[in-house]
Amino acid sequence: MSSRLMAKDIYRVRGGSVALLGSKDGSTGNVVFPALAGVQSGEEGFVEISGVGRLWTYTVQRFKPKSPFDDGQPDIEFVPYVVGYVSFEESGIIVEGRIVNAEPDELEIGQEMSICSAAIAKSQGDNVELYAFAPLESLG
Image 1: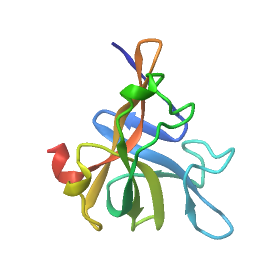
Image 2: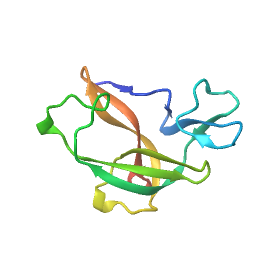
Image 3: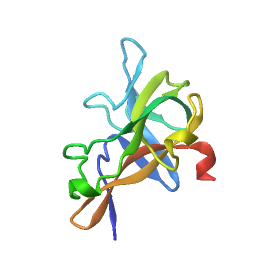
């Protein structure tokens, strides 16, 4: 089975490393994610957000999401999953995403989290991947 990225313009995978693609607002200096419209890799203002963040908060999503996040499976096969916000001190942003490699009772606010890529759906037999967060210790 092959995989494809759901949104290749908001994050990149290079080797085993995953980075979110943001930009720095020229007038305020604030980093934003995803990148502002028209800001491309290599241009002034382009920012790669990587490294370790800290779990700011989380919850369990117990209802099936709508498209494009719907995996196409019947409702009866839906499995609840963890969604959280991770704070990246260096860039000053907080980003929402799925939390993988951990059960809710294994998570703690302030826990170190790493950006990764995870299969979140299937489309025409392929895994569809999107950035996610995982506890740093779970990635070995």
